[in-house]
Amino acid sequence: MITRMTDAQTPAAPENPEDRKLLTLARSARARNAVPEGAAVRDETGRTYVAGTVDLPSLRLTAVQTAVAMAVASGATSLEAAAVVTAAEDAADADLSAVRDLGGPDTPLLLAGPDGAVRRTLTA
Image 1 (spheres, helix red, strand yellow):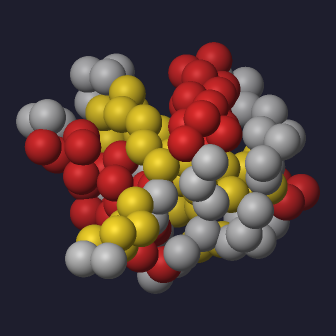
Image 2 (cartoon, helix red, strand yellow; image 1 turned 30 degrees about the vertical axis):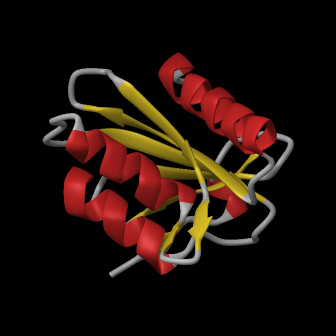
């Protein structure tokens, strides 16, 4: 089950500096690579993985899926948090599933607009 918190429940900027770092990295990846989405995830040891959307003829991944795949490929066994910067109004179900698969149902996914302001915090 996907829990979608309302905007009123989520501040525009997270209090946790590590979550702000995720948003900064995700926003930078989106801008630097000129892709629709940028994402960053933090694993159980505090390492971060940053990615953009992958859109190849033979491979299509959201930025979150790519960041989670990078974490798994690097040996991460869990996630503490994830962030995605996108113009979309909501996160894809595939993004929430990827975060849940590695992080569990309570791992937050911060959904932010292109300006980096958090629209909502999601859990899967």
